[in-house]
Image (cartoon, rainbow, N blue to C red; front, side, top):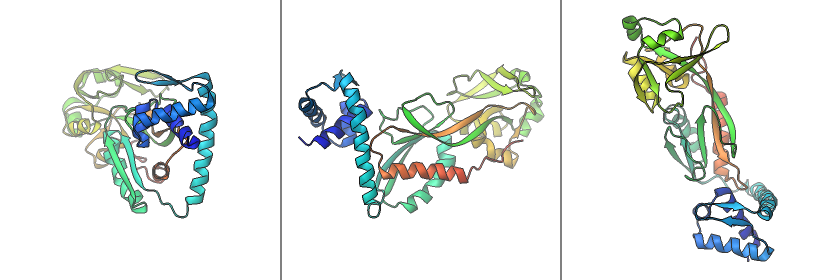
Length: 304
């Protein structure tokens, strides 16, 4: 038995949550993955994993063994990386998930700089406004906007964005310019359907008090750019992060309304799994995103 290999396979099964996911990640058959773990258990004389048809869970002995072996493997990986830094440039494919509008507007334009620096790295950029399962769907990292609720992932903040209520000058000329959020019920509101509170919008008033406003929804969409274009056409009022609305605001196609009332600030994060082995291509891409947004946030001067 190659004990180091068996330890690596065992750690991958735990991190990926199943034999099938570990097999896909390692490029092995499911039978080979199972054999490595069984040989390791036989060598140790203990059961490390509880098996079910879909998932695996650690036994008490398995938990202790995983904590020790994952640390050992991480130290080996770091030693290998230090030794290979001078000769092994990042290479291979990085699978990235990002929200549709943010990916189009703010990830895709930055890719050339990274890919020019690392010509042997390929980027697989999947854009979707739903919340993906990083491990189950095989992504190396994901960009998420708003509240984070998955403590099993590591997060690094890229930036933040303010949600703003905006409308086209034509719409305001035809329908009036609301001065208080309560007046929104008399206006046409264009709503983002992926927000859990899409039937109400939240604001902070001049006195610092919270205001939640029920809406007269005329249009829902699962894509912020679609809502933006509808608002620019004069259809109604949108409530969108300024990373989407900033350019239309600068050009005067939209104006921010409700002076003195502010929408919430949402964080923008890159998330990735806790793993003993992070390929240099993934680590360098995460670092690139963090440093890139630290230098350049196009919507930073947007709004009042």
